[in-house]
Length: 406
Image (cartoon, rainbow, N blue to C red):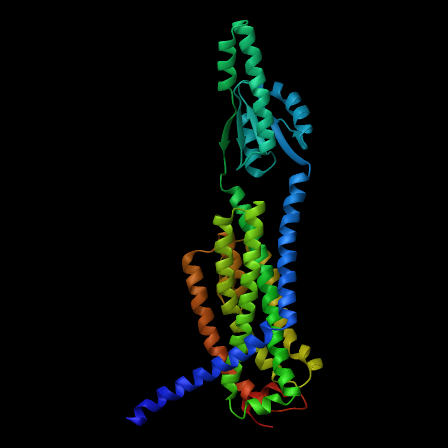
């Protein structure tokens, strides 16, 4: 019976050891002034940046490209003059006909096409109409209707009031999802940049922590009671939890800021992007941190750390830069493949999820492949870490760390 229970007891002891190491790493770092002050500072800067953008955009003069067709051309001059007083500049570009104008609206050459009766014009836009311009145009249209009613009905106030009350523009949305797509693209870039920064920063922290323990000879004390693989996993889990906590706080600050300023539509964009970003931070951090820890175990001085981590840094940077091509070509088979395969998926897939371009099967496949890659890297990194972490002095060659020979 004891023989049958022994494997289970050993697994429980190993798990307990990993959790103890993770707890030590987590508590040591979250209690530090660097974490507390840095997190509060980043939250304040992020919220301040969002608020500043909202203020700048709300006060800036907006240029709206408008085309007038047919009888609606009589609205051009009064609309241009009235909109100017509201910090909106109307740039007139009249198309030859309605169909040409609609094509220009679809491709972005025009923001609005106005046609039809001046007392009830049709205004065609791609996804949205500047609210100031809409209000100004409505006022002008009502005035046109009022003038007609006065001419036709003389001084009959009932006829005048009825005509004015019923006059309005007829807004037609040619692409109602364009505004949401723009918001998703902005959030996707933000998610990619945040994950790129987080993976680099916390990956370097893992590697630097390993080197510090080697340099201070603390590793010799720790390995007297903890196995190398347990120490490696505990360190990765502990520092990963620190990063997860910090990103959660930053995400909460961003949500509060955008909900107050209405820079983006929070229910449609914010929660999904943050949840996906946090999930992929966990997968991406574990994926990269294992390799960063293994690389840190090859050297004994902080000065030598860059030589072993620079390839990883270049890989993360290259992945972030690749996102802009992937975002511009979301349906390209190569772009889809790059966002699915590790180690590129931790940055590319959450960004594609935020932009709304990632399909469910692509996300599931990317998660499965990331988990498989983590399992393989765990075995590889644990072997390198175990064979090199106790070698203090000169840099350990990768071949020596793999074979465990001098």
